Amino acid sequence: MLKKVSKMQGAQQILFAIIIGVAVISFWRGIWGLMDEYLFPNNLEISYTISVLIGILILYITHYIVRELT
Image: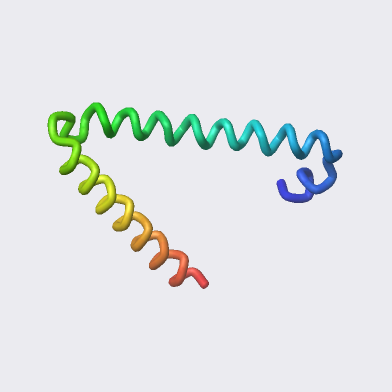
């Protein structure tokens, strides 16, 4: 895949990067919307705190997995 991207013209690479950027932003916007709607919707402080804790837990687990693979 990286070889294909490196062979692309400059304009194609920019377009590809923009498409991927929009996709990632749209994905996270959707996740945020769902969490706002379903994760303690009546108490934003608890919702935000739980969201941060979930994020930290995911980062910790994935860091541990990556460290084990290297």
